[in-house]
Image (spheres, rainbow, N blue to C red):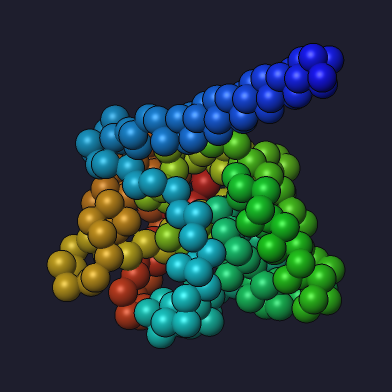
Length: 240
């Protein structure tokens, strides 16, 4: 009986220790997530940078087509068959698959994102839709990891305002663009207070130009026509 009691005591201690270790691991994991530093401000404009969107339901919301008119946006931007396009911060691939169909089999789309889960969603979508011209690229917070001098057009839809290191990212995008390649930002208009989007998730043309032109880009054009968003087009500045 004493041996049995001792064995039972050891088992109980083991269970208690295992539970405590589990709780400690849980605490450390949640502590790391919840204590991530607050988003910084942009050093040139003082703009408060937004948090990164991770909600797939929001990215795929049924009202998004009405609010953002994605097909019209790509038509206004001028995406053509045969182009090599980078969908930077592609999320769930909402624009990636549309881009892939537009550039066709002679073109290519690099779907870039930080989050492996998002990239898996894009890969599944491309497979389901038989889109063989989509290449997945996992970037970092400071580097898109796109190939140098390979991209005709880099597209950021509702993304630029979330970049925690926008200067590094713009420099990375610039390296990836072909000579005279285009950088296109699509952002909710900060100038219109009636648009029901949080202030940190909108951009003014003035702030965009101040931040982007400082990183080796030349402002090309502002394209009107979307319900709620700016289309702001830059070109890679040559000779510097």
